[in-house]
Image (cartoon, rainbow, N blue to C red):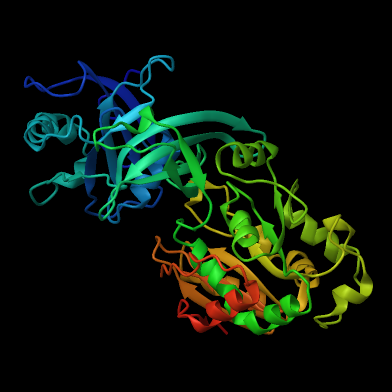
Length: 473
């Protein structure tokens, strides 16, 4: 596209412009004769002395939604505090049929050649700087680096869901301490920097040499452990009601879990296979469930069921069916018997786990969506929960106000106790609410040991160190 000479002289909140520019470097490099330049201004009002920065898109990742979409660009900018304008420089997107399906970090990353390439870009970056950058002092433009720990990756599939839109499945090799580490990931185009689901995968044969490419061998899902950082603390929350769960198991009853948001299904599979729960999951997009079964090892059975539906609407409907039943009693749900919104399940759940994001990338990553903390939704969740049960909620607050709002809403809805813990994964935390809520945020791997005797297993869990859940209210 043609760009007016004065377009970049001022900062315009949320302005996004991309254009093609000749590669200015005369030295050999891994970038083509023409470059894609993408410029995004912060949605916030600019300061008096704004800062701009540039980021060179890794070779062979120019098709990655993280770098090729405005949404991905915005998330990169949001993760760069103090930057008012972020410029991405990379190869032109290729035709979809020619686009590489694999990425290898070792190719095109020589520090000397990159330094020369960066230097050649400085005149262009100066021209893309607003006038306010040159008012009183030397204008420096730093080059940011993008690190996600991925050494190699291969695209497995791309598909389209009716609710979540475009999604991709990829196998990645990540940095490990000793052995090669392989993961399978699910990402959505609407929020490309966020890994929706991540599981460990194992090669179907011995790899032998470290030079064997990730695209040269097949992998199978390993669902015996949780590797996504916020999931172990979510599962750790059940230890807060371990004595009640032990009683259920001793009496021959499987604990029941309701998971709102399925994704790749790793949480559901773990609760079923490793803890012996009876699990019901609801997911708004049928295609996501199909992907979970095909690529992430989700297998339905008598004790693990998934359904297409809106978890928030299910709770709303449940609350709407029993306006006279709920008088603050935590056992009211059982006496009323109106659990038809959950179909097969007529008894209250011992554990409810909620893992939903806001779906609005323009306002930044946050969870849960604001709709979830409506009075009717929380009332429905309370009614679906056993009087000794626990609700576990993945929370990614945009700010402290959002965090405090979550706490207030649960306390207003007569949840008896609330606990929270931090997760070493951005700024998320897990909230636990007792009939009880738990909020999660430090990464503790607690549940990697399969026990045949699940009664003993739950006792072992309750005796092991768990994330530092603290009283939230």
